[in-house]
Length: 180
Image 1 (tube, rainbow, N blue to C red):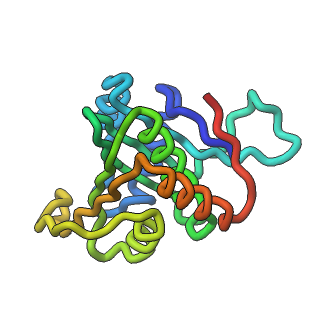
Image 2: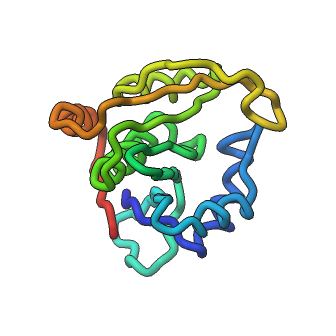
């Protein structure tokens, strides 16, 4: 698997995947375009499965994607999505770890996110990455009206947090390459 920055040519495919990844509240292509237009304040990655023997210029399959917003000394996970057939394989964890490392390099001291209250797998991942519940947002997800837990990891700018990311990554199956 390879993680690459999301580019304009990925948006149509990611937007097509959204309803299968987030059946209740999918993002539109326009929302992804808006996020990518924010420049250095955003970091979006796509996880691509690139089987052995497939040339690097061939279009690999997008199996996941995630985005991060940066502001001052804080970061915020905007979205993390993995196609249903790829769940449970560490794709979301690898995307999160890459984004959290980027946030650390950008000077973020904390990172927040929202997660559906019924998304137990995502909550377990976020807990492993040091996120704790700090509140609930009623009817946060639209149009479904689903509730969200607000979670935060802090501090993320310490040696100990870097060690936590390394530890979680070592436990993941397979290998991944992060392309600039």
